[in-house]
Image 1 (cartoon, helix red, strand yellow):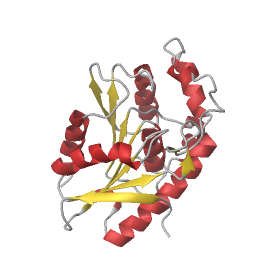
Image 2 (cartoon, helix red, strand yellow):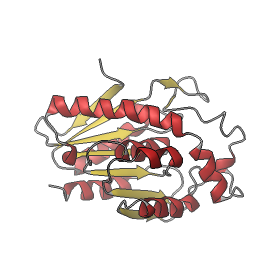
Image 3 (cartoon, one colour):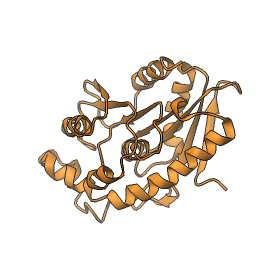
Image 4 (cartoon, helix red, strand yellow):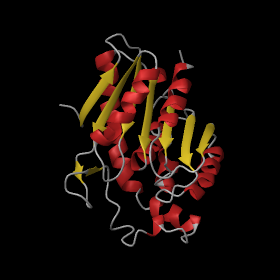
Amino acid sequence: MSEFKYKKISKGNDFSKLIIFLHGYTSNIDDVLPYAEMLAKHVNNALIVMPEADMVSERHADKRQWYALNDLDPDRRRRKPETTTDEIIEIYNKTGDRISAVAKRLNRFISDLQKEYHIANKDTFIMGFSQGAMLAIYTGLTRRYNLGGIFPFAGIVSGKDMLEQEIVSRPEVYLFHGTSDLSVQYKTLEFTKEWLKKHNISWTAMEYDGIEHKLTEDEMLDAAEIINRAD
């Protein structure tokens, strides 16, 4: 039995790459599906798999979350412009045990898919939006072997203290963030860059002027171009 319920899309049955696409907090597969479809139009020879968190959202009963946040930030200070970057970082740092547990499950899920479709780690890519972006970073860096790349959209290094103890691989990280994002605040992007650099992880950042907390077609096009270069 699979670790998670999921949907998958591809242009055909002949694929040599696996892309894991993670939805965000208070979300589900259907929220990322339109963007996965955009990506599928432009990426070569890829199977895109969208797992769904099995934890019911603490904010909306018909949505899902990868792990809880309300008890760690009941006033949602992480989203207030006046909250300092250091305070935001510490709020997300408190999620360490939670994100670590889900990352372990997600890595088992990825391994099962790789075995089923005979796809290597170097041809496997993980991406996610918001909370899914944080989980993508954690999962990719705690996987035994380097993936082809990690693609966080509007994310931040979360659970940093625990992650420092669990890093075992260092794939390339491609950071996507809108300059008007106040949900996972854009000002935290510098922290993520510096944290990755400190831990000898190569990164490339793509920043989108005026974009708030959402996915865009331009991001899908840019991600597809990077993945296609891995051919």
